[in-house]
Length: 91
Image (cartoon, rainbow, N blue to C red; front, side, top):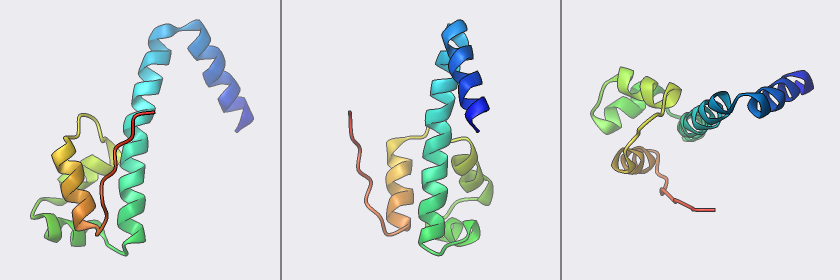
């Protein structure tokens, strides 16, 4: 894993476009992972969450795997369906 971190650091230092794309992509990936983990911790399958949100499984999959450009209202609906509260922090 150390080799990967070294590669990413070196590549980001050499290529500013890569750095910007990597950081943005990581943020989107992280949101999707957080939502999937919250769903799993709630003991729900994607199908169960679909029923609670009255949406399609492809929508849940897209959110969990490609959480780009997700609306705050969507995040609030998902959090509520999971019995959670959405908190936003600027750090």
